[in-house]
Picture 1 (cartoon, one colour):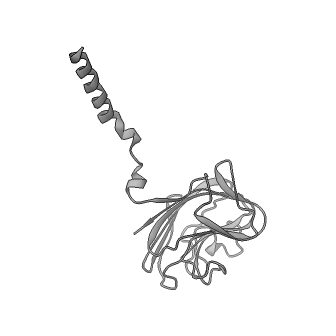
Picture 2: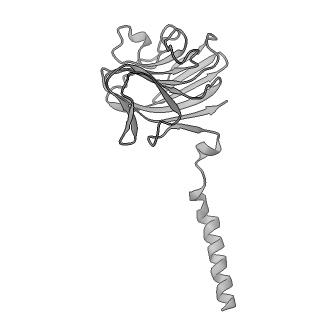
Picture 3: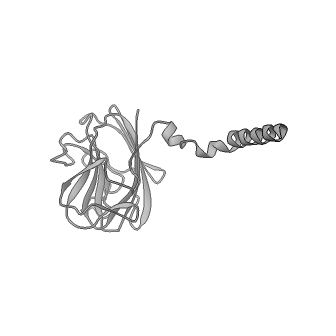
Length: 197
């Protein structure tokens, strides 16, 4: 019996050694990523305005009103990943480094735009209005999309669905909250991750 117990214990240790990796934290967690939104709650955000932001089927969604979900924390240098879905008429965006979270505009934040039907398409989806025109026009409507936004010092980079749309230097705004904007149409966010750099 003692020998069988030793063999059984050895097999258990071996199994944990080989298969234990599947229960390890994800590489994003290990790499310092923080989840701001994963569809389970809105605890990292404060609502400003009258947009009807709420959770539905694991996503933050809004389709009436006007307003922002504003992060409770401020960020200076960071990488951000966000997954979003908008209809073709949506007016939305991710505002970063906002100087005043109660008066959000493209003048006191960088607005990484989500607006396929913007009258001036050069600052449409993928651009930063009044700062950086898009290098490649990409339509985001009626599909899930991924933004990767990097702000390091004055260097701002935007990648939409794997395609770089902005790579510029601008030093107007150094630090502040991040916001998810609702301005029209149907807007959904299902994941937002951030990592200070």
